[in-house]
Length: 353
Length: 277
Image (tube, rainbow over the protein chains, first blue to last red):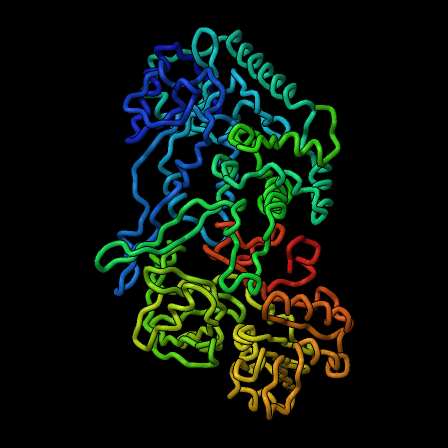
């Protein structure tokens, strides 16, 4: 069903304005770099479509950092007050790595015996506009984990910035409806424009490959990491980790959370879900006097190793995909300057970087 | 449970305590006469909580064959359990579940079944024992081993005679610290496993153990030494579990989430992962 159209710069503004979601978020230009932010009005001028990916991932739009998931009282569970809230929403300027992360979160929250109604409601109400990376962040390594700097599925609309405007690929019926509303701003792309898209994509891909320096998380690399479980080597990065958990909070696929209860009113109690991190010491701590109930991973080395294994070894076993999209956000977020690319290279003996 | 609760896996039902049983100085059993039965398999767990304070995972100790009368046996050991221990008949608790896989009871036909409990670890195993007693005609033998720190901490003492009386069941217990007058076995629970090869046909047996992780570790090594294969050993790995449905992340051993894939794990599945014990 894939259909591609050409929009000029002003045509694109009309297309984005045709989205009509009650809340629109986009990768917008900021002095310190693009970031996902709420827009009052979509105008292409401020949307960052030709800059590298934003420094924070878009996961908070699907799994907020803190969210009430249930209300109950002595009378029981209040179903009406415990439903997902919020209307339709749109996110403009997602990258292929962000879409890959959403595909991963779908496995966690939508599949299995229990679906998460809050995640599900936001997924159903969303409108996703992705954009090819024409500028690549220096920490990007998506090609090393099976990704590419452009999206081929998972979007409602995908944009390819060209010199003279944008190619817009339609990925869903919802996407088609938006295109139809801005239909008179579109025209069929020329063969030359389609060739420009291919060339731009190959150029971005080559650049990511080049800066990844031959790093590729192949099945052999995964097996090498798996074989080093329990050796202590996997936790080496702990010597530089300051336990801030920024890597997990910035990561687009990290999804750990904690449920806690609180008093929510005179007669009510609330159950709240909040982000949590496997790097933090209390994450798995059990009740009881210290020692009598051991924390399964008492040392930071264990926790760093577990995170690495979850990304590259356990996730493929659990969900059939890596838990890393190669967005490289953890690299710039890390206070200890841990570079996951270097960690992988050192552990798997790849010195080509 | 109502449809709405089912659709929101984080939402609890609110249940009134119908009875609180003092089991030992540190262990109480909380009983609920539920309007809507909470159907569970032996070994599956529930999230039992105090309204406004929080919840914690417990495997019920009552019979899965009587899902209207749920009993949860709780050791006082942390914030939620201390508050639970101060609760009385008529007070309200939160309940969610059941979660997890439960014991593989279907594998036990014609088998010798070894049950090894330590301290409050006997609580989840009692649900299994209830099921085993309902199917003794299809089992070869049941051997129950129970240990506690001291005699006052022996759990479910009024059940022991019934267990020991059954002609297909053998029951042995031990305590670590005897008081004057104790004439039973003394020693950690592994010391009453020495005779297992004479009590059961090891190649035809399954073993189930629940207790502190340090105990599980030594029980596992003892069972392996007696000739049990890792495939024949099931361990209750009751770690911290928050969501109960395999999403919040904290209870993993390797790629397994104990809440979803356990909490009773076959030792063969987990033995090669770090931080198992």
